[in-house]
Amino acid sequence: MKEVASLVPNGRLVLATIASHEPDGYLEKYQKSFGELGIKDVIELYVNDRLEAAHEKKISALADVSAVFFSGGDQLRITSQIGDTPIDERVHEIYEAGGIVAGTSAGASVMSETMMVRGPNAASFRIGHIRMAPGLGLLPNVIIDQHFAERGRIGRLIGAVSQNPRVLGIGIDEDTAIVVKGEMFKVIGSGAVYLVDAAGVTHSNIAEGEPDAALSIHDLRVHVLSSGDAFDLGKRRPAGVP
Amino acid sequence: MKEVASLVPNGRLVLATIASHEPDGYLEKYQKSFGELGIKDVIELYVNDRLEAAHEKKISALADVSAVFFSGGDQLRITSQIGDTPIDERVHEIYEAGGIVAGTSAGASVMSETMMVRGPNAASFRIGHIRMAPGLGLLPNVIIDQHFAERGRIGRLIGAVSQNPRVLGIGIDEDTAIVVKGEMFKVIGSGAVYLVDAAGVTHSNIAEGEPDAALSIHDLRVHVLSSGDAFDLGKRRPAGVP
Image (cartoon, rainbow over all chains, first blue to last red; front, side, top):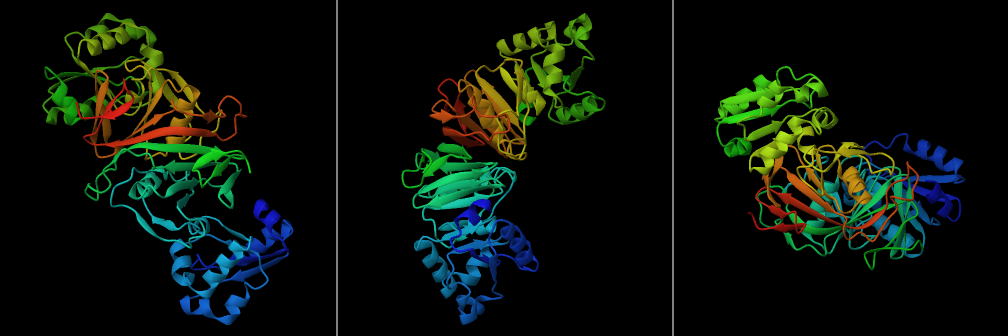
């Protein structure tokens, strides 16, 4: 949050609580935390349903704003309620104009082109046990998973990238974030970020096995990054800090 | 256990309950399970302390036996109480003569040259947060971790192999086993086996960071194997089933 606050250009931030079914209290909590970091103007954006995402009043919340923060909850709620609406369009505009679009938990998962929706924690990946869905698509060619080490999610991230090695898997620990600028990102926070690259895979049974079969996959490349490390998403390689 | 039972040559198996501080009831439980699998003669081997590991009566339990099964508990109890004793020597003799030396949980960890003793579950690896110790050394050049996906142990296994990439990391899920014969092993059971190979690593901060710093490591190679898959420990490559 400190990093987000430092990047907000004009002291104004939209808090999108759309991932939550019960967003009461979120605004106050974030107003306090961001307020202490110098962001005095935190505006909540919530939609009860998809129709509201086209209301003029909702869209105008994003006028004169260059920073949006998606709080946690259910990533499917974000994409199903605002995907392909004027709000979605405006979020992309802000990002493409160099503004900040940030998120935590579900709000981080939603950034990728295809997003993780559900999959086993603390278990090896079973071929049929995963659900993915189209994300907001701010970051192409990646799939983001979060609460990563804490919930034992390496299995499901490997399962996700096995389905199409074009997509790079990014697993982000709690109290940890990636700060993306163009094709580069840097890691901040106390935990680690895992990159799972299936481009060099020589064998997998993903398209063959029964839904309950355990995945078999050879020659994954894995990088573990920690605070201060950087990564080049274009080259799919660790890099010097940008 | 079915696989172990199928490999026992003469219906006789020594159950080494040494890993446990309170082994009461283990014998009855394993006699029942192995009995149902055709192993009628299950003999318990326990030592209260290191001196007992040299007692003639204890050593004679391993005479005319070609199969030893180490039950779970604390791997340090096994190595501290029987390491470099006549019992240890006899276990190696049995293995080298083509007998079966098997184990579950701590009893599996103990097979390797260096063994995992303690490390964080469901967390990324912190440079100072791991303890390893010399194992029984039946399997050279590997380190074995168990309850692998279930306890989110990829972080600590990566941490272990980062310290010396000569050692190949083997993470074994619950209800899953590797059956080693010479340099080959096959995977059996319902879960997965993870191989973490740090031989190609291009960067790590393991020797630099503060004890609480998160590990950073690039270019790990990871294989995920499931039932029926095989691996060549000599070549460090997945292989055809032996």
